[in-house]
Image (tube, rainbow, N blue to C red; front, side, top):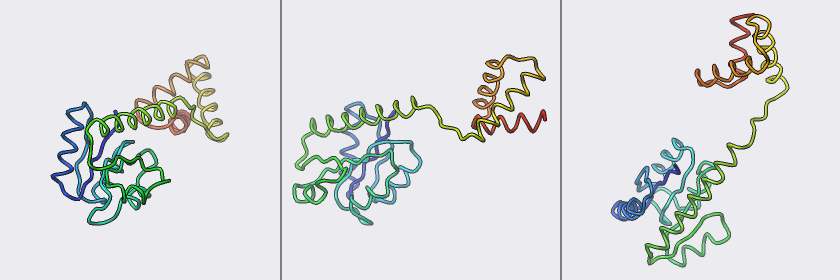
Length: 181
């Protein structure tokens, strides 16, 4: 699920926006009133949307946008003059005074976009270096020789061991080579 962080200098405004989003079915991970707090939460999460105002005690939205992790998008809720200052950037905007349906539909669109990008990232195969692939092939060959496995059985064994231990395939292959070699 896509994470949402709400950031406004007045915590009451942030809580009001959070309540609107939660009532509309979104999961709000954090409510903040400084850019540093929002960045701290964003670093801990995979991806998401920061719904925010223009200016906070420690920075403005354009600074925050530059510091956000790659898989985060920003939704700026601000007056027309402030929106004009971010025109042409990758910041999505909703004009004040806020209309609830505009906020909800915009957040919904951004969440769908992020989820689609996440699915695409998962579908792209992992690119391994020749050295990493060589280590995996060597571990498979060792498993096939010593344990009388087929190539696909050896590969599945390495995959399962990798998932169970929470390590990468090549790292698991190195461990197998170290233990059996």
